[in-house]
Length: 328
Ligand code: TXA
Ligand code: MG
Image 1 (cartoon, rainbow, N blue to C red):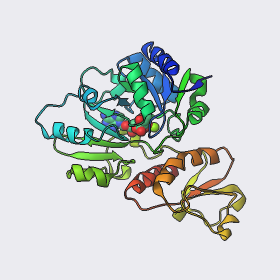
Image 2 (cartoon, rainbow, N blue to C red):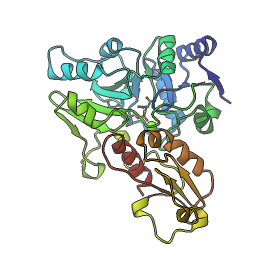
Image 3 (cartoon, rainbow, N blue to C red):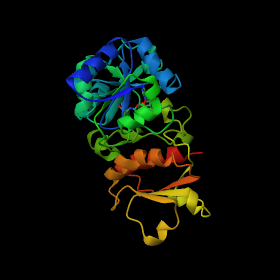
């Protein structure tokens, strides 16, 4: 069974030894907890796929501790639009932002799933940066959950999913943002938002006016990111967006996740109501959403009904995850 350890010189030393010997370490970031392996060791990266039950065509994000190190992991050509866009967006690092660019040739195929591009991220959380500095190698890490389940926002979530298969889970408490990083793919002359996150489309478009939104999955011929498959991040209990919820739901077997304070009448309509924010503060909603889904998923309910919000700012990321979780 995995040990859950706070970040300390001792636990970082252990993490370093495990990573160097080709093992896996779960670690916190500001978005969700990651399941890390040395991105330069093929067999170590294969363990990530095996442990998660992840399809081999879904590439990993490579984490590093600085823009300079990230740049050295690309094959970008100086004085090109693509290079300049990477510099412009890379200046936002450390941040909940992942950039997809042409890969340096040093990565094992397992990391990139054989693609010519690599997804790079410099995380913002001090705990993640300490881990990356201690191990001193780029770290390939997906979210530390079983494939297609809800991402973990606490060390205990990781232990619940993967505890049997891991030695060490580094713990720095609840993650700050609670949703996975924003992913931008940078092409030769354009950039595309593949996955919305806490760094918003609106903020990024200020810096790169060429930035476009990926088409919804249903309109794409081939998925732009294999992990963008429709059913993703989903609990076992059926999830309904509030506007699509069946009107004849059984109050004793249905829970509501609300984004704002609820009324007395609503209380009798549900077995339980989880209020993520009293005043529809969407940063609070994003931070607490996955923990609420995980907790309600253990209660043997028939359905979980979830509030909705406008699809802009952080709301775009919240609705993206809820639509995936409720896709049937
Ligand atoms: O916040 C996060 O990004 C967390 C933490 C641990 O950093 N990681 C995370 O990883 O969410 P994961 O594996 O759950 O999601 C990675 C996504 C997938 O959708 C994958 O398809 C996409 O990144 N991706 C990776 N490499 C790619 C590439 N070369 N081109 C397009 N998409 C890529
Ligand atoms: Mg994931």
